[in-house]
Length: 331
Ligand code: CUA
Image (cartoon, rainbow, N blue to C red):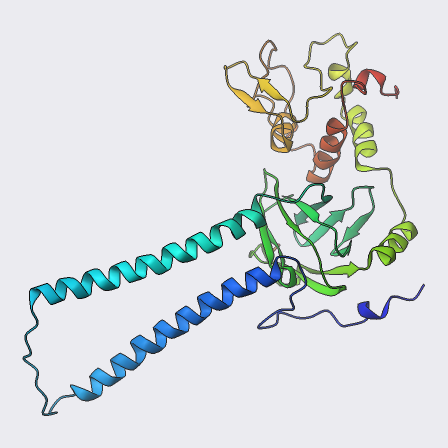
C-alpha cells in the first residue's frame, strides 16, 4: 500500500511558529500571541521612554530639571501602575489556568493510551494492543490520545510542537499528557530536556492519519502479545506468581481488583492503588507495606526495566476480582 498523499510532506523542523494540528492548538495560540503582544507593547513603551528621556535630558540640554511633584501624586502614580499590573496578571491567570488544567490534568475519557518510555537516546512507544514503535508514533486524527510517559534512565521531555504539548519523562514516576490531532500529517517529536551526548538526536515523528488509514496501518503491523499478556508471562518469569497467587504457601496480598482501590498500609496511611503505587510496590516494596502483611518481598529496583514495569502494571490492571491470578494458566 502506498502512503496517503498527506503523509509525504517532509517532517517539519523546529519552525518559529510550528503548524497547529491539535484541538488544543487554537486556544494555545491565542493565549501565546496575547502574551507576546503585551510583552512587545511593554518593551516598546519602556524602550521609547528611555530613548526620549535620554535625548531630552542629555548633558548640556537647556531644560527644566528641578520640577517638584507632590507626594500625593507620587502615591497615586505608584498605586495606579501597581494595581494595573496586578489586574493584567489576574486576568491572564483566570484565562490560562483552566487551559493549563485541561492540558495536564484532564484527559478526555475514554482516551487511547499510548505508553512512552524515554531512554538514552530514543523514544519507545507502544500501542494498547501491543504494537511497538521506536521514534515514530502513528495515531488516528480526531481521537483523544493519552501518552503515559516514563523514563528508563534520566529526565527527558516529550515534546510535540505542532500539538502544543510537552511533558517531562521522569525516572521513578509516570506522567501523562493528551492530545487530539486535528490535521493529518507528519509532525516532529523532540526530546526537550538535555539528557546527554546524543540529546539532539533524540527526535522522532508523529504520523497523524485518517482513522481508516490508521486502522489499515495497524492491521499490517506485527502484533506481539498485548501488554497485559506479556505482563502475565513476566509475572511468572520474575516469580511474582509464587507468592501472589491465591493458593500460594507464602502470604502475600491478592492483586485481584487492586487497581483503583484504596489500600490500607501497615503504618496507618491509606493510598490509592494507581500506576505509581503499583510501580513503587514492585521496585521498592518496603515503601508501602500493606496492613496485615510482613515486608518479605525482595526489591526489584535494579532488576526490572521500565518496559517490563509497564507490562507488569498492564497485567495487574487487568486482574479484576473475576479474573484473578488464581485463574492464570500455570507455566
Ligand atoms: Cu532525551 Cu534529551
